[in-house]
Length: 234
Length: 249
Image (cartoon, rainbow over all chains, first blue to last red; front, side):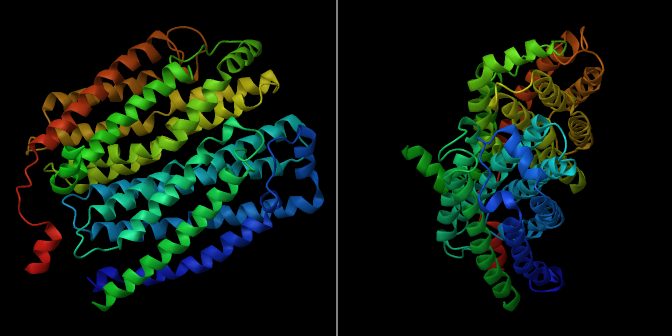
């Protein structure tokens, strides 16, 4: 398996630390993330956020960075699909499921990115319109979890159904994916609260969700990298 | 419970059954959320005034937010369904291109065909005091993206149809191949919904909604049963798993 067909996997894999560094810098560059914007802000306050000259270039540059590099997650997901294909399953159905989810997460995130850039494009617009674009951006961003939940559950299932004697990933990776899936669920319900721990700037839909995504990328990268190196050595 | 545990450990078709049950669970939740919970189906009228749309959002407020929250949590269940349908094409005597193109198209379809409606109508319901003209724009955006996303389902159904009609392994009956054509044609008659705000061709009209939903209901019921038959007929025997057989070779 370590022959020509695996060529280039290491290059795809080592793009990850670079991408992660860009994602983290873009995250802190956007002035609406470090202190997440409350859904309870008035239209005038939201318009003021976009009109602030100190904010405007940061909003645009961070969202352009996300637009460029957000889809960089797809190669990682594709490498995971190849690991699932190696598992002792009778059909390719779980790798198909995972491939189906791979495009979904980044695509939904790109829609949120477009709404943020749109709000910043003409900050002089009627504040009610800026508020609406801001709502669309935050709701899309926060509720963009269905394919992330899906892929965690599918990876967990794939590991549980793998041959226990010769597993591609160890069982704890499956348990870990279940925990991540559970941590992402509250974000889906953020529309029900404009303040408190369930609002889109709150503990569960913002901090827990984004920490879970970061932890998932970090942990899955490490276990994936180990597998790729081990499989090349075999 | 004991029987479920036995199947989980021993049933050679467990991956396929899990995908099939995921499909059934998804359509049940989809129906409950879209019909009784959010009242997004049958769709409200496209010819309403700003004030009528604002009233609709105010009346459906809680249902819209709670119902679509459920969809955000479970929409990943569409992946096993698309994977199972793609797998049916892998069993046919046709190129893998059919399975892969169906998988790509239908994986993409969830965003414009469903999730955009969920996000946009949730944003409408989020602030009942929003300017009614803006609520109206969100309303049009939501229903037009949902009803008016046509090409993916049109081409996707035709790909599945062609695979079934060309297949020599008789994985699915030919009549079901032609039923795919009926489903594809509903995407054609839906196109006028982008143009008309009154009459039978609107997004809630007799032709663009009622006939469509009838065909879609029959089609969905039929493909769920056909996928069930596919799994029942699948014969993996009791030999070793493919990768284990490879390892001992």
